[in-house]
Structure formats: C-alpha cells, structure tokens
Length: 203
Image (cartoon, rainbow, N blue to C red; front, side, top):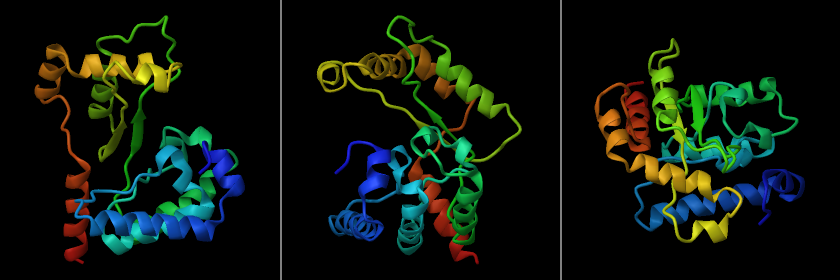
C-alpha cells in the first residue's frame, strides 16, 4: 500500500487495483453495511487507469461514486498531476450514462492554513452560503475532517490544528444554530444514493 496517489499510480497494477476495489465493496456488503457511496480518496480512483472500475462498481451496486463535473471542481486534484480535463470528461460522460449523480464541486478542508492563522468563526458559513446563493444548483460534497483533540496531534502533527479547529467549530452552538437556520439545505450520501436508485427505476 503506497502512501500517496502519485506512488500508487506509478506502482499499482490496474488489474490488481480493480480486484482490490471489488473485494472491498463485496466485503462491506456481505458484512451488512449500508453502503452509501464510493469515495475516490485523495483522487486515486479518478486516475484514468482506475476510474473505469470505480464507475463499474458504482453501476453494479447502484451506489454513487464521488464524481465532479470537472476535474478542477474536485478539491484534491493536485494529486492527479498530468490528467487533463478532456480525459476526465470521458469518465464524467460515462457516469452520466450510468445515471451516477455528478456533484458540482467538492468543498474541502483548507489543509494549507497555518497554525498562526486562526480559523474564522464564519469561514464555513461563508463557504456554504456562497454555494447556496450561486447560480450552480445541484449537489455539493463537503469533504471536512474534524477530529477530537488527543491523538491526532501525534498521528498528524503538521495539520492536527486544522482538524481539531473544525471539531470545535462544528460543535459550537453558534454554528449549529446557523446550520439549522435553513440558509443551506443539507443532505447525506444516503439521500444521494436513494435519488440515484429512484432515477434508475423510472427509466
């Protein structure tokens, strides 16, 4: 198991990767998990050599595979150096053909924020409100990474403050009140999966 996407792409046999992806989904389903979606963690599964199998599994099990309408709309696309929008568009077209939902954009934790710059109380309110008031209606995926303090400082010392700051913010009464105010409408990946299945049944 390689530690980053670039190493995975250099070393992994696409056939072996396909077998591993399939085995993981099969194990999860057989174990009784209510599988809601497939995630392209850090974008690895969106690489051209792996994306076909990623979509095939989503089609077979009728679960969404996280796909954005463009590569630039996928937050951690820096892990996919050398992949063009044209290459990615072919897989988006295939996902649409399979009626796999496409999200407009991935809104992600800012891992580049230094510890010297405190997390603004209104940061996420502003991010989500901008989406809600924009012209691009549809599904947006929030890739957030809150962690309770205690262990993550040892596991990931360089970015632990980003995670624990999110944990404190999302648990605050002020943020919860804003979220419940209805400025944005929240949904789960289960909602997205169920919408996908309804659309397929109506074909």
